Amino acid sequence: MLKFPPLARGRFLERRNRFLAFSEVGGDAHPVFVPNSGRLEELLVPGARVFLKDRRTLPGKTHYELVLVEKGGVLVGVDSRMPPRILEEAVMEGKVFKGYRPGRREPALGDGRVDLLLEKGRGKTAWVETKSVNLVEDGVALFPDAPTTRGTRHVEALRRLVEGGGEAHVVFVVQRTDARVFSPFEARDPAFTRALRAAREAGVGVWAFCCAVSLQGIELEGEIPVIL
Image (cartoon, rainbow, N blue to C red; front, side, top):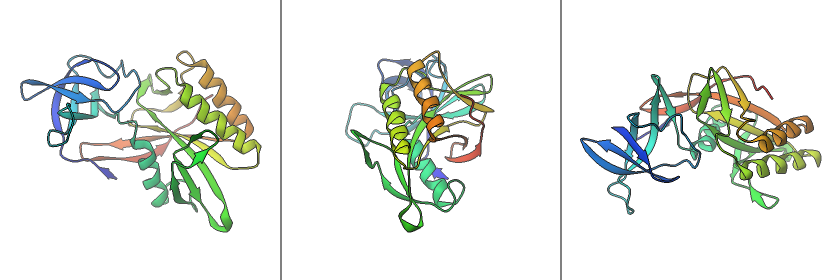
């Protein structure tokens, strides 16, 4: 489990821009760093219960960092930087990609980078891109919640790698427990959906996993089906 530091409880007030919000903690309004560029409209509603990391001893203008949001009694992780670490830990523990071990982080691929390079014996490698999923509707985990040209480029790069004889995977890390299946959110980003379908047809592995989330930490849990 990736452990959290002790978290402060707060009440969400408003989001000013992609990375800045305000939450009430201890009766006062505080600036909060939002480590996620997605819309998060279904989660970040006024009055939502949030759980925050204290940043007041660090440089910068924000006092806290958003870690979890409670939605309908479900804790949801919102830090989009977490999925590579969550997956890396699961690989090390043998939960997923058995027989592989974590290699380089953020290896260069084409004009960009992907999250992880996994290694196996005899020089075999697998290139893995993770995506953070926070949105669930009627049991369906959906990504992206806003158009992502960067995400589309990642998927297309992995497709080209596989077409050239390599091994590549996209792993959707659902930072909550209440999803039954995963599907790309075609209405929000048809280009990403088309790219993901083409990638899987070319042989890119497409996986989705829910996470066990608590106030103490987060870890990869069960695999869920992917519907494209």
